[in-house]
Structures are given as structure tokens and as C-alpha cells.
Amino acid sequence: MKRFTDANRTLWDARVEAHVRSEFYDVESFKAGAAALKPLETEELGDVNGKSLLHLQCHFGQDSLDWARRGARVTGVDFSSKAIAAARSLAAEIDLPATFVESDIAALPDNLDGAFDIVFTSYGVVMWLADIRRWAEVIHHFLKPGGTFYIAEFHPVSWIFDEQAERLEVKYPYFNSGEPLSLPATGSYADPDGNSGTFTEYSWCHSLADIVTALIDAGLKLEFVHEFPYASYPQFPDLMERQENGTYRLKDGDGSVPLMFSIRAKK
Image (cartoon, rainbow, N blue to C red):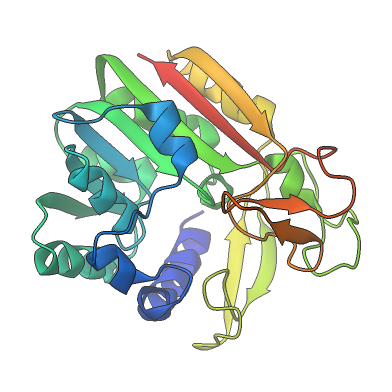
């Protein structure tokens, strides 16, 4: 699996600079005080003031620093050295205390000590994990007794469709075969026209059952699993329309397909 992880790390290293500059992340507005987090996760996770929070797969740390603004004592983790450097730079620029650690999630217990009140992760994270059971074990490892895990994520069903098709057409598998999907990567959600070189991305299918069962088997107690018929960004650009609350829904067949889910669980 190391060669797949190394390839993905190279890809994400190449994306960081463009993402920091992108309209999608709008870092300048965030610096001026705008929220980076979505209402869904702030409402479902609740008050974080005074709590220790571990943010897994934090990218360049903008959401991590939003939690810090809300009073959390934040540690962000990402496997991209360039993302961690950008996160530290952003934290220093806006004078927010936060710790950022460069590590693959599976190896995090070897690279970080301590336990946390909250472990948080969100949006486009699960597909990059080769071993969903190890991910759940790491979450359990870093939670204090009574601590909370929370994830808001795109629904695994939504990943089976061709994002460029004129209607919803199944293109990718739902169930995990153990082998990664191998796809050319020349742009990204935040930089669609970007091409920093020739890259291949490797991702893994994890069903909702895989995710839930991994968390239960790791020793977590589920508080809720929610599914939503909308997404936080236009995953299918030609098939979705933006709502007044900033979410995106299908123009046709609205409500018929789960597009996101959230889970809150306790140790």
C-alpha cells in the first residue's frame, strides 16, 4: 500500500498552493473572519470551547483554525508536508494557536501523543483510506473516555456515479474489492483546470456499512447516523443547483439519492 500512499501524497503536495489561492477556499475571507466550517458540522458537533480537538486529514488547516476560533485546542494532522507547512503559516498569520502534525493516519500513534475530547474529520476523506478498520482504531486510540468522534462526509453512494455525465450514471463500484481505483488526476474540486504535472490518484471504496461497522468494532458507541439528499459542493456540476443555504441539490430526482452522511459516536 505504501506506493499508493506515496503517490497520493505527491498529488496532494502539488495541490496545496493552488488550493490556498482558490476561490473555493477563499482564504482571504477566512482571514477577515468568515467561517470555513459548514453549519451542518458546527450544529451537530456543538460547542467546542475549551475542548481538545484532533482534526484528521486537515489539508492546509483552514477548518482546523475555524475550530480554534471557536475556542477549541486544536491539533491538525495531514500526510502532506506542504499542507502542514501552509497550515502552520496560516495559523501564524492570523495569530491562532494550533498544532499541526505531518503523518499518515495509520501511523499517527507513532507520531503523536495524548488523548482528545473530540476527533473530527470531514468531506472527501474516507476515499483516501486504504484500511478503514485501522482508521477507526486510530480514532478510538486518540479519544479520551467519553470523548466524541464526528464525521461529515460525502455519501459512498454518491461516488458510484460519473461526475461528468449528463445524468446520473453508475461508473464506479460501491463495494470494496480491496484494490484501489486508479484514476488520472490533473485538476481538483478547488482547481478544476489545474495541471501541476501528470499524476495518478488511488482511492478506495468504503460502503456506509464498512464505515459504521469499523467504528463499532473499534469500540465506539454510535449516537447517530444521518443521511442527506444534498451536498456541500456541486459534486455533479451540470446536474445540481445551489440553494439559498449554500448546499447543492439535484435538479432532477431531488431527494432520491443520498449525497452526504454524518456520524457522531462516543468512546
